Amino acid sequence: MKTFIVNRFPTLAAVLSGLIWCLASNPAYADTNFISKFDSASEVDSWTFDFGSVTHTNSFDPTMDGNTNALSGAMKVTFGFSTNYLGDNKGAYIIALSAPITNLLDLDSMHLDVKVDSGSATDAFGLNGYFAVAFRANGGWDWRPTIGDNIGANYQVDENGWRHFDAPITFNQDDTNAHHIDFQLYGGPSQNIDGPVTLWIDNLYYTTFSTSTSPPPTMTMTRTIHGLNITASVVGETYQRQDIRTGTGNYSWINPSNGAVTYSFTITNFPAAPTNGFEARLMLVGNHLAPGPFADYNETNVVYLRLYDVGGHYDEELYYKVNADHVSIFSGPLLARLSGPSPLGTWGITVAGTNITMFGPSGTTNAVFGDDVLANFNSYTYVYLGIVPNNDVNVGQSATFSAASVSGATTLLDEHFNLLNKWYKGVAQDPTGVLLIPTNTLAKIVWSQPPNVPYTLHATNRLAAATSWPAAGLTINTVGTNKVVLITTPTNSATFFRLENP
Image 1 (spheres, one colour):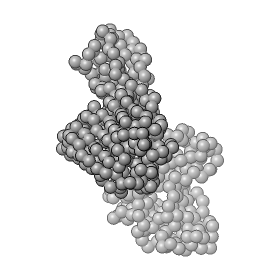
Image 2 (cartoon, rainbow, N blue to C red):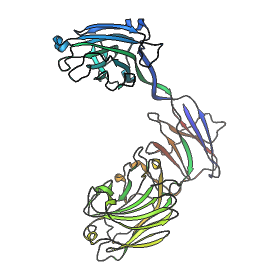
Image 3 (cartoon, rainbow, N blue to C red):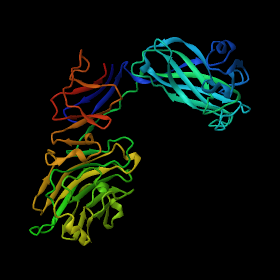
Image 4 (tube, one colour):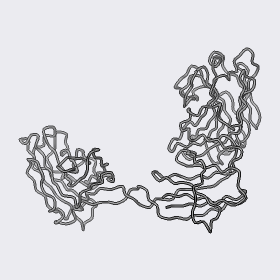
């Protein structure tokens, strides 16, 4: 198994971490399996003509090589095509595999180098026929193609005239084995080849998925900050919207009985600079009974308050749009901007009709909505809270919100994120990236989870004398491609943790 040990002391005044690695395995790209390197006459002689009406010759050519190695060689084949052959205007060579392949799920991809002589007869498309490589499978001679494409002396070739093929290998669900390999050149009625075509074949091999030692997971133990931790957990998604929204839309400021209404959020943890573009945001979505994800673009009526890293300082900006579904929020006007040296603190807006005061730790500024907001946020107003990475390097980063509030509205919100019972996570692109950190949480253990390798967490309080490591019995949360365990109030003695992959 693989193991990773970390030590939990009664406090986090010190953290001891160490690595103990034993063998573990998981699927990985592995062996190259040559069918023929074509480096000798004996290798070429192992190939025999299989089917087709064309005339045919094959020989070892030591002067040609797909890797331009003068000491190697290739198989030279000449097919004599004729339009008289109609549908049988083709030729194929075959070889038996050294041993049948019975575990077809291990097969990954097929590879081959081909070069066509420039003096060869051309087909109706100015090329030199349709080339295919196929396994022969099962108890008979079922044709299971892997490589298939038109070839030509000057078609998709390198500076030496060679074309390298890489193609995935697939089989039918009920296939049980593969025992021979064919390559075929087809010049039938659609190609209409009439004359000889000469080509060279080299470096025919397939790759397999097999077991090998996998890289260890990355494991860390860090302090935590209480609140709502939202992570940009979708790998490869630069502009992922990781939002939550209120369960009801009863937070409108447009009501005759209301005075000014204040919407705010408090940030207690933000990625350390430089994280250019990383954004925390609060949105108000109007007059849609059940607004969904990507609200800044998909929804029709949106007030958008963003706080983001602009390199060396942080800007708070306010935008809005009305009657504009599936339109970028940034197509609407920029109403106000504040700048400050830190993202930590409370940010928000106070709204009375169309009059706005935007505030943050660095001060306040005033702005005005257009009158069009008055009829577009009066029935429903949902509150959204979330993050957007906005930069590839920010994927995987997170922010922690310690509070969100709506004051002055008919329905009040005073949220300190002990529960999420007033919120809906389904608008997040990846809801696993939304994680509550309870007040009694001391630390968290995070590890990357390799594909198809189910690591489990184990613990002991007697490192040197431990004869076994029982399962830790702690809740394992999935956050994107990582696993997260929250460590609550400590015990009176050290506790050691490790990952195991049986």
